[in-house]
Length: 215
Ligand code: CTP
Image (cartoon, rainbow, N blue to C red; front, side, top):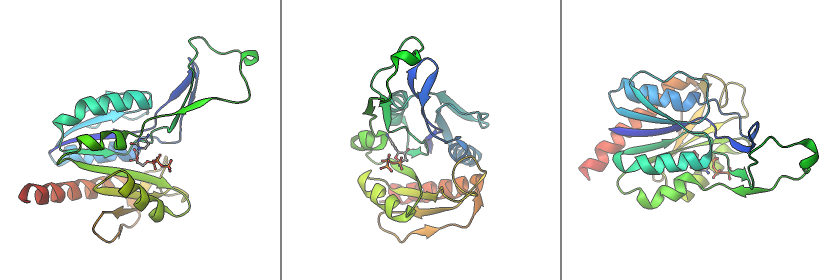
């Protein structure tokens, strides 16, 4: 299969030195890319700013902002069988980005923001037979939120993870996830290394592609 994977955070710059972002380190997306390449798939990784080495055999395209990530994914998507969005895309960007570093005296206590596009929703009309996978990093009630997003974003698979635990979600090497699909019961996985979670997602993609090709 040809698999397009996004990973990491995006950065939304206020000026050349300041930005809005989030805690994503990209580890989960790089693990999916590693697992997919190991299984012999052709993999492109669209990476936000992260401190990780490119997995062997993976083509990497670096981006910074949500708008750049959208442009790159939109351009690449037609050539791929599956899109796996592990990236923690910033939902908002500053309304204005200053070309020069802002001075304290020129800044106000209120930051004006505008919404970034939802990449998955924007690309839904181009989905066709492609398999779309999303990730939902949640606190509170991960399954309720993730199943709402599974439907709202028209996904084949939503991977829900509870980021309130110290051994799951951001920065760590392990993850505790539940797989949500439109027509099946949720599949909770035990606490696993992110690479093992990546392998399970790649297995799921292979089986899903097999079923789609037969239908
Ligand atoms: N996502 C996306 N474009 C965005 C934001 C998120 O494609 N602008 C994708 C993420 O890569 C992820 C999925 O949507 O696969 C869920 O991300 P999440 O941030 O949980 O979704 P939001 O719609 O931003 O939900 P919330 O209401 O919790 O902010």
